Amino acid sequence: MNHSKTLGKGILSAAALFVLAGSASAAQGDWAEVQDEIESCVAVVADHANYSDAARVRHEVTSIKERTVGYRLVIATSVFPENGETAIREYATSCVVNGNNVPMQFTINETANDA
View 1 (spheres, rainbow, N blue to C red):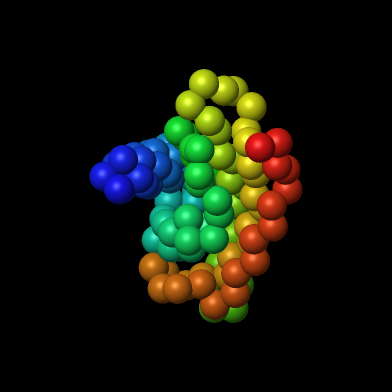
View 2 (tube, helix red, strand yellow):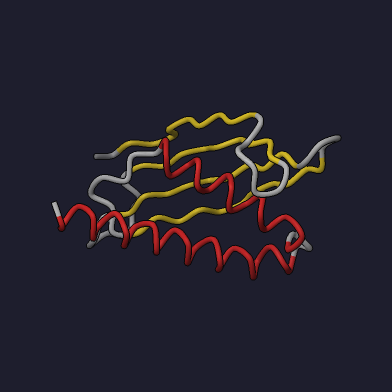
């Protein structure tokens, strides 16, 4: 039980690092103002994606469009095993969110599964 909690915390920490790394990229694309929205969507991705056997998870924001209320984000998520460069699972997510609130719209689709 402790191992799974530790793994879960490690995965969430890795996800947070990727979000923070994404912040640097986002700032370059002038996306720093939507950091709360990015974090909110990534948190919901973590609730729906299968992170089993994951040593590393990468979230890449591929698109941000301003909406009447909030933003529509498109996020590509890749799940990597401990000793691998090839993702074992990949997800495409679309999320409409305003601030750090729960997304108003959320869709996630698994796009690859080599496990």
